[in-house]
Length: 89
Image 1 (tube, rainbow, N blue to C red):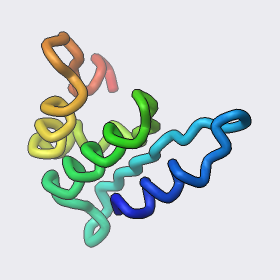
Image 2 (cartoon, helix red, strand yellow):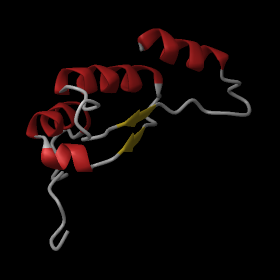
Image 3 (cartoon, helix red, strand yellow):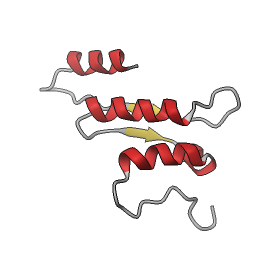
Image 4 (cartoon, one colour):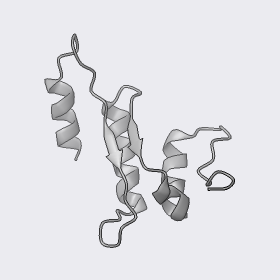
């Protein structure tokens, strides 16, 4: 995972493109990744993404408190950001 991110970063033509890591989540049985794995993916994205990140979807963190904690610990430093479902959702 880190090798691929480093290679994408290295191969990106900085004059024309900007490397943006993408982390996708699913809550489908058998496809769900652990909070530890998501945390590691976030660490790699933060290392190579220069502040850019595409993170999809919030359904997993809303349903899985351990994934929400992995996200908060890396991305939400002292803010009021909530991963709770909006009212009426």
